[in-house]
Length: 104
Image (cartoon, rainbow, N blue to C red; front, side, top):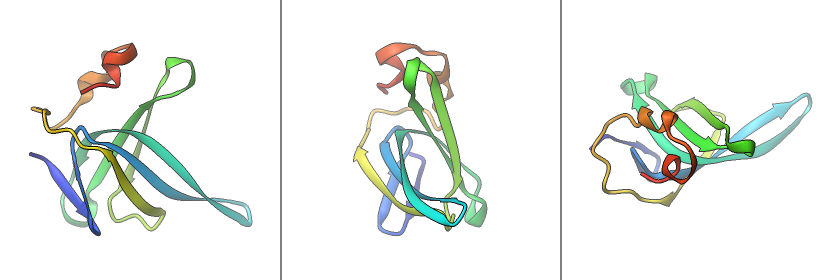
């Protein structure tokens, strides 16, 4: 099973996670939450990155990739654990539409 550890949070491929990241716009900063399915963990050590995919407005898929040790990440919450994943990368979700694109 492919997994990573960020602080006390242990994340696995297929988990539904919420990434709280700090966004700076001019002089102001705010916390933005991105919720989706963890589809990829790659790299090792300080180069480790993870990719989260969600279905946005109008049924358009949105993916974001962060370094695991990024200073812009405030916290990562695991909303739903998934134990039935048999792949290390869930890129096949890119070709699916509707509910099947959200369920793993």
